[in-house]
Picture 1 (cartoon, rainbow, N blue to C red):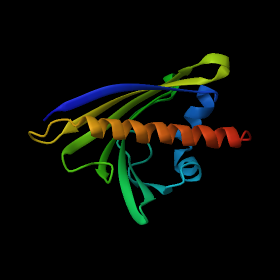
Picture 2: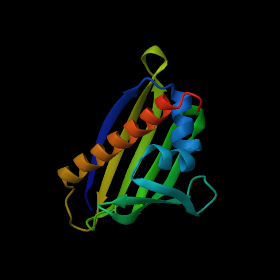
Picture 3: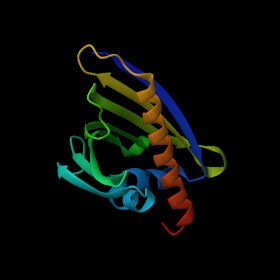
Picture 4: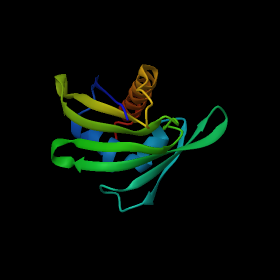
Length: 157
């Protein structure tokens, strides 16, 4: 098994508490509204806390597909949220698990800085693929931007 780890950082004008609320507390409702490809988010196992598995149903290339996310940790006091992709299209055949450790911090002018550490664990002798890492980063950046745009367009939230 190989492990490929990288870190990323994003900034936004949205306040950390508001962004955290949308990304974590109200994610099941907000994500399908903010991310065009995602049709629904539903809990398939658990109560919403650590250990919960969520199914994100999406349309990709005209086909209905899904991704399974497992919540690993929620740290509301420190605006932290850790989860893993454990099944579905987000997990190539050579990958055992992709883990995300995320935190939000105060940024400039009342905005936020989002920091994420992504760990890609491969199966067997498979070597971590830099392209898979770049693809995961691109999806994460697009997701973050979609939530940011939704919150900016909906100041009442």
